[in-house]
Length: 330
Image 1 (cartoon, rainbow, N blue to C red):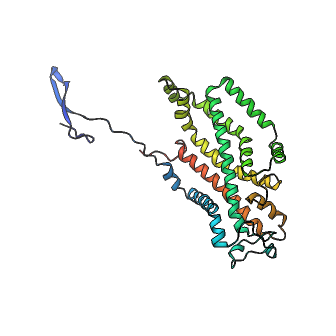
Image 2 (image 1 turned 45 degrees about the vertical axis):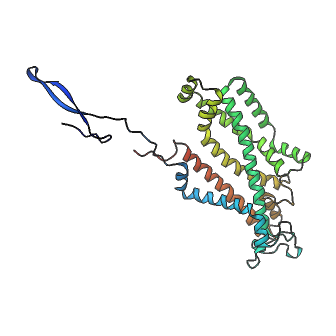
């Protein structure tokens, strides 16, 4: 009898010879499967599909996109909707309470009568740019140095650990005070300084992961085929470091925003009249008893932005790393 092949068309019967009693040969037709074996495909959902399944992640991404778009549209909104600029003063409206009838005073006014909501829109540009820029500098330097040290080991690894230990031994506050004395701490200066003093932690994390990955079977196999060091790092090591890098990026952006806010509280961050969430919160704390509503805007935005970044980083890591993602379907 023939057995149907469920994969590729009709079966082909071939005889199977078995010896029965008294040396008698019994022949049975057995099906022989033709064609190639079926291709096994990865049924795991894409990263975007997994992110869309998480309500918290969708909310976090929506919040971040909304804040970014509002910051980019600050010029148009201030001119067309609110009718005032971020530096326009009205001393008669100093410490004005929130007034829904006047768009410029939806969140009140500060000690100089400047619209709080307009300044928050312009401050979103500065705070998000400082966070993104400093995190980009931090990750670029940290990932490159950590990857090279973990792969080459030896003198390169020793030099990185010595350099990282040296940077970590110098108090960050001392370096920031020195920068504040020598330079005016504008946004771009702050981006470079925050990024360059934060890379040791990232570099050591990446170094540890690289030391583990470089001994894995797939790296040894690629090395045996004659792959160059650059190709091994770019095609095999760096993609496997992506979950860690994405998580560090999201956390670093939030940490940089918090650091900028802390520096502004000490007078070392973005200097007025340029608005940032940090220096707006600092000015509002000084008038907390008289105008507590000035704290609500910058404080809430800092909290929501940092929380959204942490949630997004954690979700992206779970989606990218197959060990933490959804199980595969049979």
